[in-house]
Image (tube, rainbow, N blue to C red; front, top):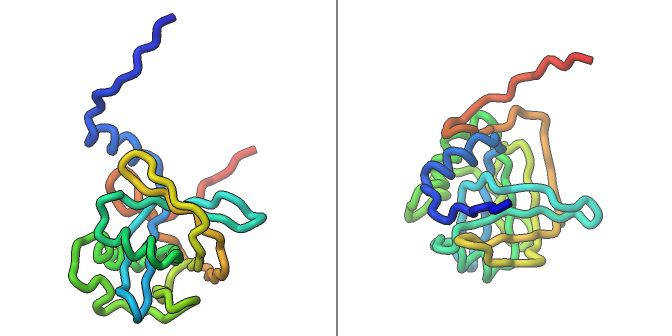
Amino acid sequence: MNTKINTTWDKRDLRNALGSYGTGVTVVTSGNSKSRLVGVTANSFTSVSLDPPIVLWSLVSTSPSLEVFDQSGRFVINVLALHQIDLSKQFSKTLADKFAGVEYQEGLDGLPIIQNCVATFECKTIQRTVVGDHVLFLGQVENYVYESKTPLLFCQGNYVQVAEALLSN
């Protein structure tokens, strides 16, 4: 049997297909008052290991924030709540100061932690790997907090709200 691998993907169409998988929405932050603060909206966040606690996220390799993530060696995953759509949009844009008007406090090593999120994970980068057009960051969780709030989700190009599923036996 001959299998032909398609190498001429329509990137927009592939992105639409991948967007069929709903994800949570995060803002990943880094830097401190001695460097510059950076933050990017990302839905590539996932748990990798519980023992030790390790998470993963990815950043496009052309991001102007990449240098700070690399130099800091640390990052915070801020899992956004439903009411934080504006933060998701703000951190997805190219702005001179993405933190303008954002409530945050300093965490470990001065990392910016966005307030009123569903959860935050303060991490130390343990591995960085270039894969295709992105850089994968693996981080060991050093501190975390969470609250019982409705998370912000993204699916098929839109923000969506959690709905309870009816489970049948």
